Length: 154
Image (tube, rainbow, N blue to C red; front, side, top):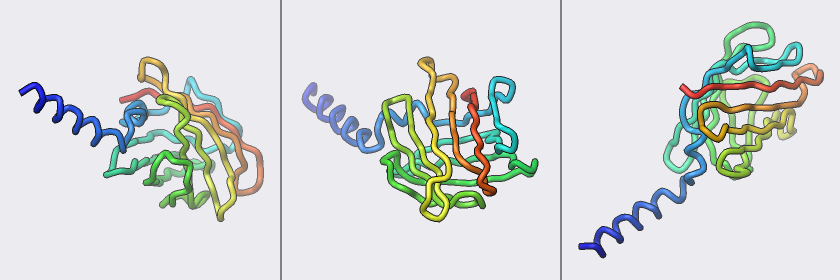
């Protein structure tokens, strides 16, 4: 009986490894805490970001307010492996890559036409209740933009 239990536990662990336990810190819905965040003039604001496992990949859904005050929505599905995956719904980007640095930190690049326009880092707090996203790059007019967004997990 013990051997069967150990084998079942080992099998479950092996199934979970391809998705990576580190992704757990990022999964869920995150709401922007605008009062705790800093934005350069003209920087868009991501109001809600949701991460969910989709097979062996992760789907990131972003609801935001563009630099001209209009609501926007985009989606990305890929792996945290540093490779570029397509973005849908974002006129300012067509690709995004995420790189897992450790179990609470992701690096990312946002691309348009194969060129990196924005880079950043996502850090989840030790207690898993908040995260800080820092970015810098250029907008569609070539102006420098930067922001430090603080989110709370819902």
